[in-house]
View 1 (cartoon, helix red, strand yellow):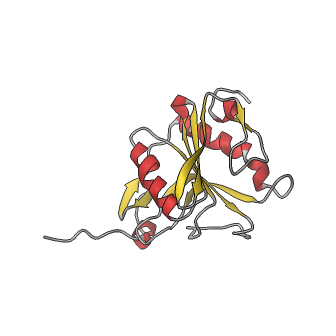
View 2 (tube, rainbow, N blue to C red):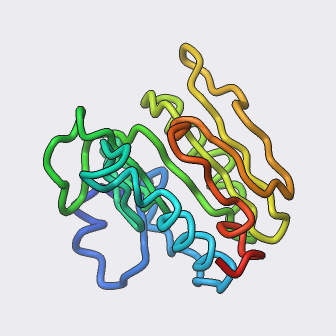
View 3 (cartoon, rainbow, N blue to C red):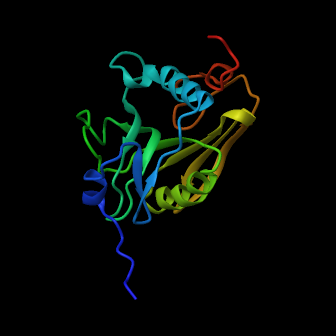
Length: 184
């Protein structure tokens, strides 16, 4: 019987298809993009924009669809991730091997297990301080904060209009807009 050969970052980088990521040593296709997902991703990035600028609160690199290599067999592509510029002074490029300070996944139907279990455990193990999960269809956001070596729920929001969320308390976020009901 042939042993299962786990894929690595080299396999991922040479993979002929796009929209794939490396999860538990397997090359996995990312979910098909849905309008709700795209709206939430782009609007969250707009709302967090002041944190990515040199003026205003600043101090963050906020990046969408970014691949992060955590382990030899783990390189997910995050919907949105952020690094404090104090930890990552230069704008990154390519696959990043420094764990983010914040990750946001927009939960896709059929991929809930990856976002809520696999990535949750991976990010917790690598000390990512903040992890958000957004369910566009349910208008829900759960923000986790690392407490020692385990995540705890920092905020759980359902149908909220505005909120200050860790780690971005400097900016009041328009959740109505992010979750797609506000026209902006």
